Amino acid sequence: MAPNRSGRPLTPPSMTLLLHHSVSAMIELSTPVSEAAVRGLKVGDEVGITGTLFTGRDAVHKYLYDGGQLPPGVNLKGGILYHCGPVIIKDEQGNWKCVAAGPTTSIREEPYQAQIIRDLGLRGVIGKGGMGEKTVEACKQYGCVYLHAVGGAAQVLAECIKRVPNVYFMEKFGAPEAIWEFQVVSFPAVVTIDAQGNSLHKEIFAASQAELAKYV
Image (tube, rainbow, N blue to C red; front, side, top):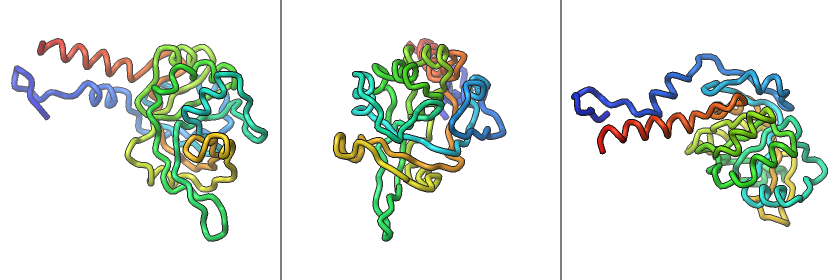
């Protein structure tokens, strides 16, 4: 760890804030998730999700934003949407199997996310890298949280996916952009935007800017 001008080690703002917000016990969430459960979460909470996740990337977000309808079988009310383009194969029995399920960079969905949270009744969005002010405000107004999944751990996360019952819009959007339905057990993530309007990403950016200002 690099020293600052005083010779003391410099702790990165991101590390300081994560340590400040961290908690010891994982909170178990089951889908569908109630608004009360979501509003009880705070930035830094570690959660383990059990139940159903649906994936959605750029094509699905734009389609829904433009007024497209979800296919029968997909209900996102009280649900959690995962920004993910998984790697899926078929096993010897012809069943879908997920072998990698790392998060997609979420800021790409910022133009669409707030409206989708509002219109579809989402309670959670999983991704990486955080999201912007419109999404933060939508989380606060409608009762939703942004959950940060661990990047670079796609195979580990896939182990939490016990079944892949269905896929939707495969022909329309192709495999990476399709809506995949996952049955998960204790899928791990960290709350980095909560339903009170707090954003760990904003805090880290502000702390980083303040630290940088000391050296320029």
